Amino acid sequence: MLACSGAAPAPAQHAPTPAVPPEFAGIGQPFTAAQLTIINKEPLSNYQQAGDMLLQKQLANPFKLGSAISYQPYVVNGKPSVILIEAISCDDCGQSRWQNALALATFGSFSGLYKGYASTGDFHVATIYWGKDDYTMAEGATFGSAYSSKYINLYAVDGDSPVIDAKAHFVPISYFVDHAPDANWRAAMQFMDNANHTVAGGKAKNSVFQSWGSFIWNGADAKVFGDSPPTPLNNIGTLPLANENQDAVLAQLKKPHSQFAWSEYAAADIYIATLCRSFASGASTPPVCALPAIVTLEGQVAKG
Amino acid sequence: MDRFSRGLRDIYSPKYILLNLALLPVYFVVFFALIAYQNDGIPSSVFPFYWIAGLVLTSSMLATIAIYSIRNTTNNKARLSASTWGTAAAVVGGVIGGCGCGAPLVLNVVAIGVSAGEAIALNNFLTNYQEPIFLTLIIVNIGMIVYYLNKLSTPTCKVPMLGKPH
Image (cartoon, rainbow over all chains, first blue to last red):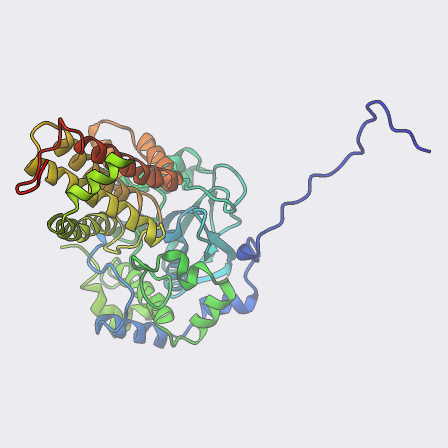
C-alpha cells in the first residue's frame, strides 16, 4: 500500500499550450506558394472590371471615394512609399489588408504573407498578417513585410496584442516612432506621426492610418465584410469575413463572381489610383496605372 | 409596486402611448446616426438588436414621462432629469455602440488638452467595456422609469387629469 503523506513535491509539468480555437484556424501560418500566386498574379482584367463596376455604382459595399487627403510623399531611393499602420485588434484593418495586398501586388510582389485574424473579442475577421505578428503578447509591434517592387517602397507595421479573447488595443502613432527597430523605420514612422498632426489633429491611431504616395488615408477606403455592408440587424459578426478563413477568401479572389470579390478588387483600385496619381509626370509606372478605370478613378480619389 | 402601476396607467393614456411611439424612431435615429457618423456612414452596432431596442425604448419612455410631467404636474424634477438622462443614455449608447475600432468621437477630448495617448486609452477602455456600460445604461433607464412613475403617483407630484375624479 502506498501511503501518501506530507508534502511531496509534485512532478514537474509543462504548461499545456493553449489550443487555438477553430475560428482562428491556421493563424500565423505562411501562405503557400499557390496562395501567394493568387494575390500576386491576378489578371489586370479583374481590376478593370471591378473599377467599372465601382464607377457604374454596381457594388453594394460602401467605398470612400474622395476621401484621400493630399500630403507630401515619403520618398526613399527615388521611389514613393506606401506606409500602413494597423492593428491586430481592429476589424477594419482586417478587412482592409486584403485590399491593400491586391493593390500592392500590382506594383510589386509578395514573397511571404501570413494567415491572420483581426479580433476585438466576438469577431474574428479573416485577414493577412504582413509579417510574423505576435498575436499573444500584451503589447508590441511587428515591423516589415516580404515585399519587393521597382516602383514603390512598402513600410507595413501592425500593433500586436492578443487575438484570442481579444480586447481593443490601440496606440498613438508616436508609439511606432518610439518602438521602431532602426533609423529607417523611425524616419518612416516619424513621417506618419507628422502627417497625423497635420491632417488628423494628432488623433489618429493604428486603426488603418496609411500613406499611399502623395495621399493619406485616415481609415480604410472601403468596408468589405461580405456581399453587402453591415446593417443594424446584421452586424459585422454575422457577415462572411468574420466567419470564414483565408482559403475561402482566396478562392473568391481567384475567381471573382460575387459582390464581395469584386468589392475587394474595387477597393484595391482606389488605393491603386491614389498611388498612380502620385507619380511624377513621365515617371515609370506599372501597367495597372494605364487601365481606363484607374485613370478615371485618379480624378475621384482625393478630397477637393 | 402599486404606485408604479398606477403611475404607468395614469401616464400611458392613448395620447401618451402615441407620443412614446412617435419618440421611439427619433431615439433610434439618434442612436444609429451617431454610430454611422463614427463608422463611415454605416449604421451597424456590435450589440444585438434587442439590446438597442431596450435602450431606445427605455430612453423614449423617460422622455415621455418628462413631457407628461411638464404638461400635468407642477412640482417635480422629472421634466428636466428624466428627459436629460434618457437622451444622454441614448447618445452615450450611440457613441460607444459602434463596431470596428472604437469610438472616434471620444478622441475629440484631445481638443480640451487630453493627450493622444490618454484619449486612445479612453477609447480602448470604452471599447473593451462597451457591453457592461451599455447594459448599465439600460438598467439605469429602467430604474429611473420606476423611480419617476412612483414619484408621479404621489399626491405632491400628481395633478389629476381634467374630468377624472381624484
